[in-house]
Image (tube, rainbow, N blue to C red; front, side):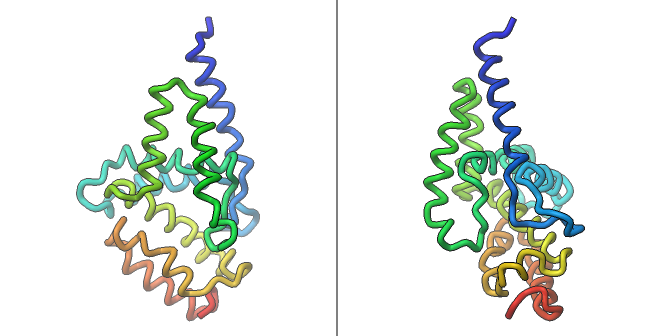
Length: 196
């Protein structure tokens, strides 16, 4: 017998399937197409496990993985806003807040509170765990752009300074990888993947 609680949970599970339809600007590493937001979330959750050794002391890896799996659910309603889209980012927070209210509100109250708490923590980036998760969220598309010879950087004429600013959360979220990122940015500029 299907209980009201189970009905809510099923409704939420079916609703989040729509994340697979939200296309990001980031190309797959083979350059064949743009990735969707569900693929992105899965990819960075795996990154958290693989890069766990670079997490600063005090990071709750399980909590970071949960954040990474749910942080982009709001894109179901709000869409994916390209990080270098100045105009689109002006009202991004409001659009995503409304989406969070609706989507997490589909769940039973205690589950809604738990997932909303994870989403809020990721957005605030005030805890060491959220900073680690946010750093991975920045590193993944960076690696894709590097692998696709500039990918969306070239399409959108992104500059070195824009990428450095975008990647700053890596310095605090996973400091051991910051040198790698800085070196890779320099290499991408030298090769011509990124504009000076």
